[in-house]
Amino acid sequence: MSKVSIQGDASGTGTLTIAAPNTNSNYTLTLPTNTGTVMTSASDTFSGGLTLGGDLTLDSNGIYLGGTGAANYLDDYETGTWTPEFEPESGSFSSITYSSTQQIGRYIKVGKQVTCLLQTNTSSISLGTAAVGLKIIGLPFTPTSGSAQGSGFCNVFQNWGTTPDPIGLFVSSTSAVLYLRYGNNQKILPSTLRTTNDSNQMWAVITYTTA
Image 1 (cartoon, rainbow, N blue to C red):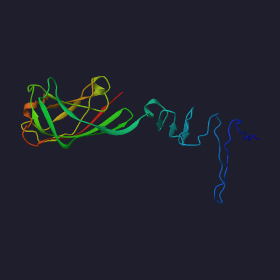
Image 2 (tube, rainbow, N blue to C red):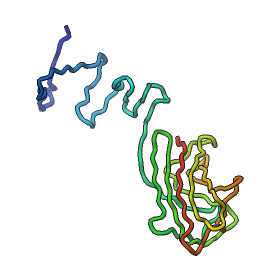
Image 3 (cartoon, one colour):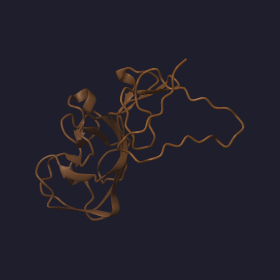
């Protein structure tokens, strides 16, 4: 028969209380065979891992779902905001003005996959260098290096002067930048944007992989 030992720490003054539940049912607490620490609060950390029901395993940095292989490991989840901002691929605008509350970015990051939402509306643009493509800067995470892992996709709806539909966006393979294209990899030129009214609207969803 196993022995049970309850021992207080000589340097502590706290009281250990084991209270029976307010029920007529019997409950059994079975401790694991491995040595370790039983967590007592949400701030406790643990080593060696914790397995719940066979399909969920926790360690001090993340969680395994449906297995304990590298492909099942989730070490990050977060949501937040970012600010999409237009720039020419080279040179600069003389000036650009965004409509009020129309420069919005949201993101959700699950593990290495990032999904970004953006909404923009430019009300005034003064061109500095016109014969170059457009890009959007400000993505919250840098894509994984390499064209395959650094690419992304989007859905875009817009009303942009003489620019053909649909507009596509793709993520740079080396930096947190979105490039705008249409047709056979044709660049979107700043000169196609309306410069005197409120019609340069864009809504987009982009998914890409980060390190």
